[in-house]
Image (cartoon, rainbow, N blue to C red; front, top):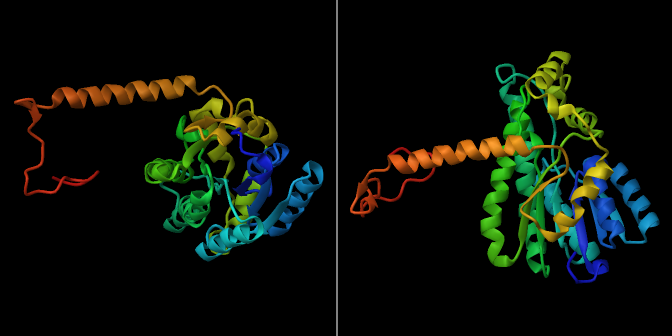
Length: 304
């Protein structure tokens, strides 16, 4: 970790009352950082923060925050500013899960997962970036999933949401670079946590159903057996990545063997990029696809 005194620094973790979020907050406290645990379960967040303070001798507090509410997230940023006067590390550890084949998922189910996972991450960044700008070295991190590196069946809405969070992080890395804020993407693999339980608790009444059926789990495992192999505890996963997180590294994988999956995807993308380059007609060293002076360049996905 950088030379600045840890005791002056503040780590903020959403989804901080249990699982990976709590483990990250605890690891930060063990290194001397002050900690704010934000979670939909406010009582649990307060209790865990009190335990962290007692164990590690650092100032910590917990606060009930539902990232589905922009007002609540902004109020949480204000509470952190009032309590600590700063935020140096902000981890957007947001994620509800919902299994199901794409043909089965309803529009309302898509809206719920995307609102919490994607807009929740965006709301967190929007609310806390002003505090990170004021820090000597702000660090913003987003929890995605190893399933975006090695996907599985029946996880369509969850994986789509986590791909979107990855895209958000890449955009913010460009936008926040002039402010000296580093942006990290965390890729957690399988852990023994309360993830499914907390997802069920967060599910709105009008959508309530089982987070996943037995055939969903079977299809997931059949499509990607390695996804459920060798799970670790949240504390072990957090311990594997805490130094990289505080250093602001770009990509951070908690555990597991994802080398082949990442290498295969990288090779296939490289092949596609080379093929596109080689198809480009040359005209005096310039592409004939260059926009005419009177036309604005087409954006991604735009029709020409």
